[in-house]
Image (cartoon, rainbow, N blue to C red; front, side, top):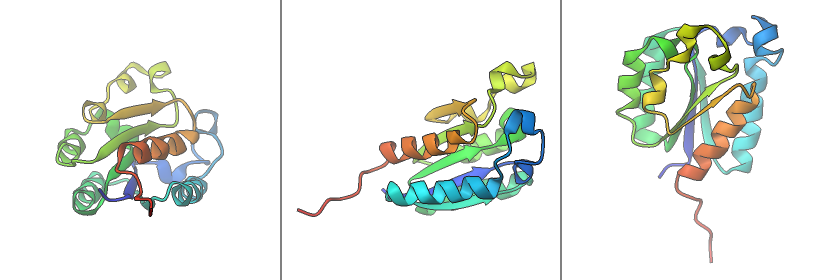
Amino acid sequence: MSRLVYVLNGPNLNLLGKRQPEIYGHVTLADVEAECRTLARELELEIKFHQSNREYEIIDWIHAAREEAGGIVINPAAFTHTSVAILDALNTFEGAIIEVHISNVHKREAFRHHSYVSLRADGVIAGCGTQGYALGLRRVAALIEPVAVAA
C-alpha cells in the first residue's frame, strides 16, 4: 500500500489563524502544512496537502487519492455536516481515512454534531486544536502497510 497520504481541508480553513481565533487559535494553515510535512518525513510518509472552499475540488482530490494514496486525513470543515457527495467519494476510497476537526464540534451548535464523513472515517479526532492533524497522520501511518525494512 502506498505511503502517500492526502491531507484535505475544507471551506474557510484558508483563514485559519485569522478567523475566530477564540475557537480555532492563531496557527495558520501554512503552519499546519509545515508541521504535517515535518511529521510525514519522520513517519516515512509522503503527503499532498490541499485546501478548497469548493466541494467539487475536494471530491476530485479524493478521486485522485483512490489511484495513488494509502490514506486520507480530512478536515471537511462545514462540508462535514452537509456533504453526501464527499461521503460518496470517500466511500470509493479503499485506504485509511481519518476525520479531523480543530474544535470540539460536540460542544458547539447542534447542527455540528452530525457528520456525514464519520460514516466512512476509520477514526475521528475533534477538539485537539491543530495537533489533531499530527494525531491523524500518526493514525493513518499505523493503519497503512509499514515501511519494508531491509534485512
